[in-house]
Length: 111
Image 1 (cartoon, rainbow, N blue to C red):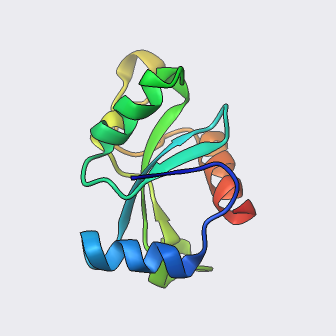
Image 2: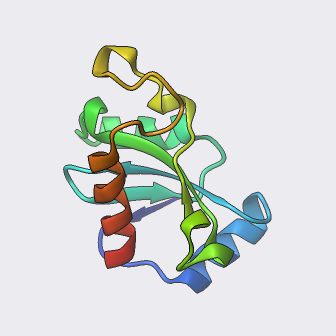
């Protein structure tokens, strides 16, 4: 497990993907604090760590990063059970709000 608050290299993400799922890295992003937990098999475990560290549920989003797709549309996929929040208007495992998707993509680009 690794907390990312500044930067992470594509090389490091590729190494993580080879050890975990052979092509992807699971991550949970806190869009308010602009941090991310990576390298854990379940989004729910990453979410739990961030919640214990005072992140707010409404700011946490599960994503899958495909390091081999860096610079392409398939680099980040918005798909996680933790994203299913009808009370917050998110009725799918994706991230339904395009503005939140933009924030997450911008964070990943800045790292």
